[in-house]
Amino acid sequence: MPVFRLPLSSSGRFPSCFRVCVIIPAIMFGALALTGCAADAASARLPLAPPGSEKVDDVAFADWLTAFREDALKAGVTAATFDRSMRGLRPDDDVVKANESQPEFTKPVWEYLEGALSDTRVARGKALLAENEKLLDRIEARYGVNRHVLVAIWGLESNFGSFQGTKSVVRSLATLGYQGRRMDYGRTQLIAALQIIQNGDIAADRMTGSWAGAMGQTQFIPTTYNAHAVDFDGDGKRDIWNSHADALASAAHYLGKSGWKTGGSWGYEVKLPTGFDYAGADMSVSRSLGEWVKDGVARIDGRSFPGGEMDEKASILLPAGHRGPAFLVMNNFRTVLAYNASTSYSLAVNLLADRFRDRGQIVAGWPRDERPLGRQERQDLQELLTARGYDTGGVDGIIGFNTRKAIRAYQRSIGVPADGYPTPELLDRLRRG
Ligand code: CA
Image 1 (spheres, rainbow, N blue to C red):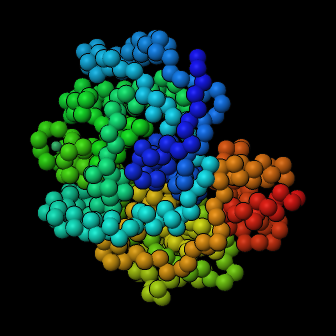
Image 2 (image 1 turned 30 degrees about the vertical axis):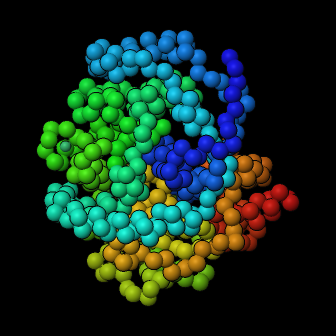
Image 3 (image 1 turned 180 degrees about the vertical axis):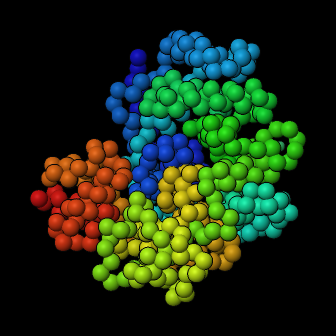
């Protein structure tokens, strides 16, 4: 079989970088690290495919389809649905390429937020909030989820429905299910997609989405759709592609089921006290707001926290390490993580929701002189830490809980703030030995 290589840049197929790199991997592959995800997120370009990548073989694909058909039928998909939806299907080379790409370069979180919170997006969101006021009244009354957050998710997932992806979901998922590093995902989601078609919500040829199978105005993957999509406009179909009402209500239903607290805060930008122990600044550490306040954590604008929230659980988030802004994040911040397991995504959604109400300006400055580590550098960091006896839980280029813990231990050993945040300076120091 012939070997092919990726073009230097294939990102032009997608309208904005964070859709490709942040949203899709985070929705689909929830195992991504919480911090550092935005990192993977926002790549400047896509890299060359690894050598040995092979073009799809039509005969092997046909064999795979025959075997997969049996699994789908066992899962309750009828032969008629399967054959009608899959007829004439062949793999999509664009999907193969997108699936293989592993971005090397990483966009800083502040650049990702600038794109997510652009003036254009804020203005469009405000206009849509006004246009859809009555609908949003009904959705809030039914699900208890804040309208600004729903419209923010709508804005980030599909630019308010205007970019949903134009690929055939069935074809994309068949391609992923057949080969590559997301085969289980592809097969599970393809069966769910066929169930949706069988249910009559949408015809196979109108079921469009991203290369990864994220669909409609909410960019739900098929299993999320099956669990959470609702028919809110009452036409008998759960149409997240063409109905604003169905899309917004489906997002509300999903957040409601994921632990949304009506009237709760997502969090606050805060100022940490002098001598703050950065070991506590991790999403894995939850304490009551009252305890943080007792330790000297204060709102950056000098206002006091609402008294009624003192028993709420909160964590400190440092999206760019101890030199950047600090946030105290609460229940509804975590709920948005159910939608997309990236802290940068949740921060963008919640800040965008605030901007719709003319709030949500970040006060502290970002460490703009400090570029985020690329994929290879993150792997090098993990290797060097491991060689020194700090357990990073493997070398995968993802800065997850274990790697942050290892970084903190190393930072403590050299007497620098133990924020668990990887920087080029830290990597240099490890390389120098
Ligand atoms: Ca409907």
